[in-house]
Amino acid sequence: MHQFILGMAMLLAFAIIVIGALYLTRPRAIARGFGLPLPEEGPNVEWWLRLKGVRDIASGLIVLAVMAWVGSQAVGLVLLVAAVIPVGDMLIVLAGKGPVGSAVGIHGSTALVMILAAVPLIAGAA
Image (cartoon, one colour):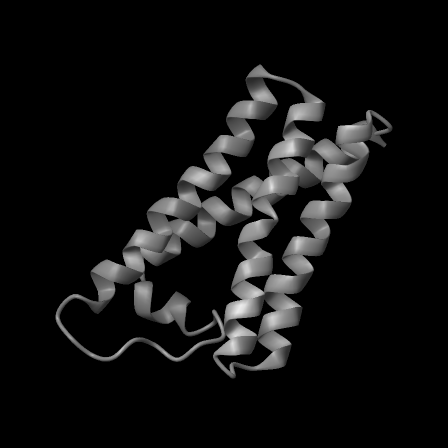
């Protein structure tokens, strides 16, 4: 079970790195799936969207670094704290009158998976 949960954590880390890379390479296309309309047009929109990509890549790398050098309980703690990001994204999409399906289905389910992976790692039960 422990290896399965660590595998989930690694999969989450790689997934957010891939999403970040897509924000760097195809910012408009990937942003459309976020659940909010794209920002107003302008010459700098894609650069603003790419900022999210850099942060997503860093978030995934932090999880991988903690996995490699610290330990399972620390990975759980990082995942639990990082779950604030998709929860915040979900709340922002809902507040912005974005699709509930995107808010809950994408962002809410991501937060749930992160929490479900984090709790047993923190408790040392995994």
